[in-house]
Length: 424
Image 1 (tube, rainbow, N blue to C red):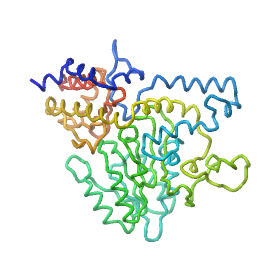
Image 2 (cartoon, rainbow, N blue to C red):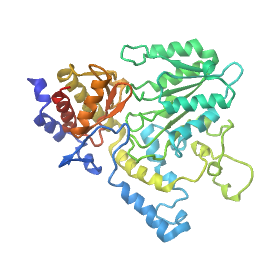
Image 3 (cartoon, one colour):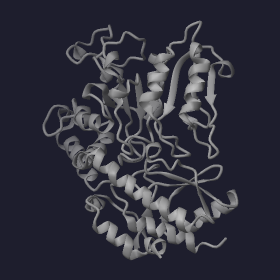
Image 4 (spheres, rainbow, N blue to C red):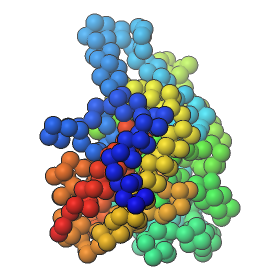
C-alpha cells in the first residue's frame, strides 16, 4: 500500500509542498507538451534556460548598440573584465580559489590546452590512463595528443576496464591500474561522473593515488559541475575542465570552464599562448614576449565571448542563492525517490545501472530496459510521446536526470507512471 501511495499524485504534491527549493522551478522556462509542461530529465545533456538569462544577453546587446567599442569600458558590466563577473560564483560551485578558475573556450578545447601543458611525456613516462568507454571527445583528444607527439595509442593509452557487474568501476580497480602502470604514467585523466553509467568518483583519492605514482592528474567534470559539491582545490588535482550547458544551464555550446591548481599559478610549463592570457598590467603594451597572467587566467587565448558568458551569469545567480550543499541535499532526496519507485514498482521493466550508494552518483540514473535494445528504444519513444523526456545513449541506456533546481517530485511520479503504463 505504501509503495502504491508513493506513485500517486497526492504523495508527489505533498513532497513538492515540503520542498524548500520548489520555487526555483519558476526561475526556468519549462518546455511545453500539449496543454501542459513537459517532464524534463535532460539536464545532464542541456539544462533549461534560466528566465534571467535574456536580461543579461539583452544588456550586452543594448551596450553593443549604444556604446559600440566603448562597451569594453563603460558600466554596467564592461566587457574588458567581463569574465571576472563569473569568477567568484564559479569558484564557489567547484570548490576552488577564484584565481584557480576561468570560464573560456569549450570543454575539449580546454582539455587540449591543459594536455599541452600537463602531459609532458619522458622516455620513462609516456602513458595516459583513462576509463574504458570514456566519452568519445575525451578519447579523441587524448589519442590525438599522443599522435601529435609521435606516440602510439596502442602502446601509450591505458584504458581501465570496469570490474563491476553493472559496468561500473571499483576504486580497487582504479588503484590496481595505477599501481600496475605507475612507473610509465605521465597523466591520469578521469571523469568526475561517468557519462553513460552516472557513476561518481572520489576525486581526492584518485589524485592522491596518481600523484603518489608520479603522474599528473586531471579531471573531466562535464557531468559533475553543478551536479555534485566539488572541492577541486582540496582534491589536489592539477587541472580540470568542464562545460556549462548541462547542469549549469548556460545554453547550447556554452562557454566552458577550466581549473588550474594554485601550485601551478606561476608555472613555466609549456603552453599554447594567446594574448588574453598575457599579464594584464602589460598586455596593452603589445610586446612580443608572452608573460602569463598568474593562475588559470594565464591559459586564456582570446578575449572572452561576452554573449556566451551572459547566460552563465544568470545561472550562477541561482546557484549562489541556493548553495551546493542545499542543492545536493534535494538531489539526494529526489533521485532517491526515483530509485525507490523503480525498485518497488518497475523492476519487471527497468534495471538501474548507476550505483545505489549516493556517494557514487549525482542526480542521474542510467537505466537498462529488460529485454534488450529494441525494447529499450521503444520505451524511450513511448516516454517522449507522453511528454517525459530523458535521453538515449547507445547501446542500451536511458538516462533520467531529475535536476534539483527545476525538477519536482511530480515529474518523477509522472515518469514512473509512464513506464508502468507502457506495454511493448
